[in-house]
Image (cartoon, rainbow, N blue to C red; front, top):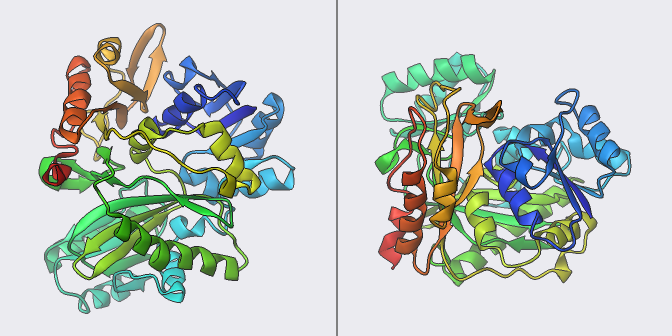
Length: 418
């Protein structure tokens, strides 16, 4: 099987890394890819970032299966274009991708499906948004309605702070936002893979969205994640599937939009049960790096089955060891981002037992350098969660580039379960 991967981040490197271990995969291609992906795949440049251009690449390499990493191509209709051309692709069509590309649409689906979620008000003007503030206690949450690369959510504690965030959200992300009730509890990333009929839950993970230790600072695309069977009990997993995942997928089918691909539910485990914070319509990053480090089945066969509607025949299995992914970012991330700094120590990190997934990297001649944003995802397993954390940070300590920044507490919140 010849597989094309769309994307250039750590998630796409992790997918390529696992596909390279699959006996069913004969060739891997990526567009645009990155230097890490280039070690296991042929990286190609599309003529433009459009469904038509991506389809041209798939045709040129005669891809049997295309796997889409990031959200933007899905929202742009890449799946619709490939299906119309008879190309097998894994992911939701543009209408289904609205579960992520429009938080208002997502809330409407949740309400119709009876999936528990926070109270909210959608606003399309400063005046309406300011009026919405009066309907909630502080702290409250302000969310951009559309795609925001994981950075469109702000938790505000005062009216003055809320006014400032309203202005910046409207100016940065467009003409609609949501004002939402603040939920308390523990966040969990719950991801399923579905072929439109069967939905298979992946192992639970926890992301670390805030930029700094202790969940301080602005939200990011994710500064690290860990994957551990102790995050959720079997009863909690069953409740999430029965009360959230299955009803939402059934509601999408009722609307004539059967969902295929990865569906991520960002959940808050509150005292009254799980509540949905958001849906994403793809394998999330950096959770993907931690998940794929533990996956114990042929990824090529699994993705092919999901794309072809035979997922019920592919049971999942996981390695017992927990895994941890620590993201190393460039100076100033997420507000600003430096680039062009040389990166050293990756070989030493991997010799120490870590797997280093590339994200914001590029080659300058023969020198690997930073390309801004999240640079690397240093990932490792261990017999216990404490050992997995130690193994990942041993890899981090071996890597150097000017202005590197990373959290030092990835996975620590899970230690109380051990």
